Length: 181
Image (tube, rainbow, N blue to C red; front, top):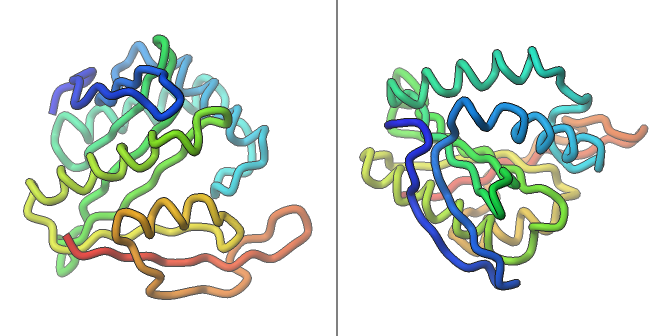
């Protein structure tokens, strides 16, 4: 898939216009600012420190190469010309090549307006077109908002690993969710 390809345009519940598209190299600074804002907020993601521009450039370079070779499907949400969310669908290998793993993060101030649900539906549609049969994702047990969104699009809790994350001197369970395509 090409970088910067627009997949969908829609209006969020708060009236903002949203563009879902594949990332492009020009998104580097936006993506770095986005992920660092999510880390700074203390959101329930596995990354626990801000990234440097060099680290983000290496990450983005790998993602763009994987996107163009169709090893993964990446999707960003853009509002007013700024990247405010990032997601990806990674196809597993070997005996699990029918399974896709989803990851998604949305910037504070853009949650609860339908952007995450629309991103998930777009990832699910792409998985269906690729012939995948199962989708999985991981979520912090403390992230009720995300779990609700995942359940709304058909994911169910299929497993739990106790004390998988250690954040702010507390242990948090890792919830594994799955959905048939």
